[in-house]
Image (tube, rainbow, N blue to C red; front, side):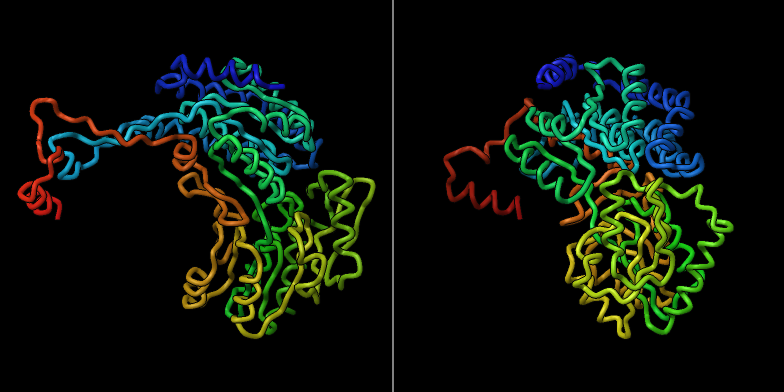
Length: 453
C-alpha cells in the first residue's frame, strides 16, 4: 500500500542528499519558519481537537518544538563530527574513530494527546541525524493531523518527509513496510503490536509508552506546593498526558490538608469555576471509559461531567484499593485516586507490584527519603517536589523503561536515537606488525601476553 512512498524515500536517502550539515541545517530552518508562520492554524486545530487554550498550546506544544529546533541548530555541527578514540595495543599503529551515520528511512508514529509536540520533536531528531521520514499522525486528532500534513507538504518534498493520514488500516499497512527505524509514541498495548511488526523485519525501535505514574507525598512535604504542583500535572491537557500523575500515595497525617490545598489550587487555576481553559476528553470512547472508572467510587472532590462537550471536572477519588477498576489501567484523564499510607514501606510494596512507570514524583523535604526513592524504584524519569517539568529540557533525555518504553529522545539524545554510530579502524600500510598472524609459537604467545596484559 505504501511501498512506493518508502522506495522513493530510500532512493532519495541513497542519493546522499540528506547527509551534509548544510542540508540538515537548512531543513531545520525551513521547519522552524513553517511552524512559526502556521502557529495560529496549529493553535486553532488544537482548540478544535482538544479544546486546548492558546496558552497551553504554546506552552506544551508549539513553544517546546521551536525550542527543540533551536537547540539542534546550535549543536548539530558538533554532533555530526567523527570522534577520535584511543586505539588499543592490538590496533597500533592504526587510528580509531566513531563515525555517525543516519539509519535511512524512518517511520514516526505520533499520538493524539500532544499531536504537535510528539510529532515534530522526533522529526527534528530524524532530520538532524540525516534521515528521510514518513510521519503518521493520529486520526483521533484529525484537525491537527490535517494541519501537520499541510505544513510538511508545503515545506519538504515528499521523497524527503511525507505525512500519511488515516487510522488503524494505515498504521497496519505502514508497519508492513521495510523501514530502517521506527519511533512510536502511544500505549503499551499498541507498542507491543509495533514491536512485534518491527521484529519480523529486525527493525530497531524506540517506544515511548506510558503506565501508572505515582505521586508520593510524605509527612515532611510542603503541602501547599505539593497540592498545587500535583494539580498542575493532573489538569494539564485534562490529564491526557503520558507522564501525568496517575495516583497519589500520601501519608495519612497530611492527607486532609492536601485535599484542602488541592481544592484551593483548583480555585486559583479555574477562577470562579470557569472551566473554559480545561481541555476536553479526546472522543466519546475515552470519555465514557473515564466515567465508568469513576462509577461507584468515593468522590472527595469534583466528579461532575458535561456530556455535551466531553468535559470531566478535576476529581479526587478516595478509598481505592489495588483491586479497584481505576487502579487496573492508566487513567489518562483528570481523575486522581488517593491512597493513604502510614509507613513508607507500603509505598515501596505497592509501586513495585506494578509495571515500571514512565514517571515518578516525590514531594518530601527529607534528603534520606529522596535518596531512598532514587535507589529503590526504576522509572523513566521524574521530579522531586514537582511534576511534569522534567520533560521540559532539551538537555535531559526523555523515555521509559520496561512496560513504559525503551529508548529516549530530546536534544542530543534525539540525534543519537536516529543515528547509527560506526566504530572504524583506519590502519597504517607503512608497516605490518606480525604478532597477530599464524603460526602462534610459544615465543610469539609469550610476547602477546606481555603486550596485552
